[in-house]
Amino acid sequence: LALCSAVHVPSLSQTSRQRCFELLRACGRIEPLRAEFARGAAQATELCTTLSRCMEGEKDPRCLLLCLDAAAAVLSLPVAEDAAAELFDICSCYFPVSFTPPPSDPYASTRAKLAAALAGVFAASPALATLVLQLALEKMESAVLATKAEAATTAAACLAKYLENVPPPTPQP
Image 1 (cartoon, rainbow, N blue to C red):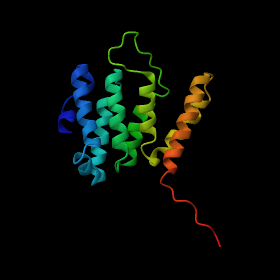
Image 2 (image 1 turned 90 degrees about the vertical axis):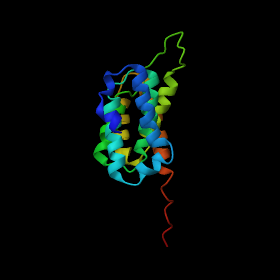
Image 3 (image 1 turned 60 degrees about the horizontal axis):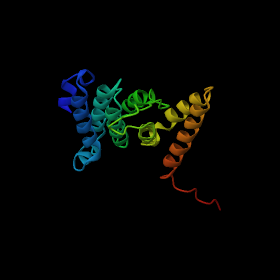
Image 4 (image 1 turned 180 degrees about the vertical axis):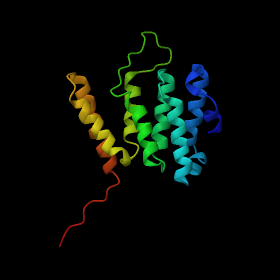
């Protein structure tokens, strides 16, 4: 984390930013690094804050896919609510995804991959439910039908994910 915190990542070359995002993603995805960050909210929150600073304003789709994957992993850790909200705010500016790859994109970056990665961020933690639903309701007011559809689909998918760990109600006598 110190490495990514010590430099202004957005000003680095695409390749250097990509390496930084790969490191941050590894912290949230790869054991035993993930286990270390899962042990306490302070470490997980520091990781979340570092990722927020590093990914803000990212435009390269290859880097953005790494950022969103890292964000989903980090948000599934015990992160402080304000840090999670900050990372959500940074990620939510990409919703709905409006990326069209160039005709001869050698990296196979697609709108569908970016949209799926962003949905993974939104579904990463039930703590984001209020923020996600507010965003979805706001986007459903759009005059663009595709935006409304993506907002509804994303909200439904997130709600289904959030409810996976909710125990069924116990019958009342």
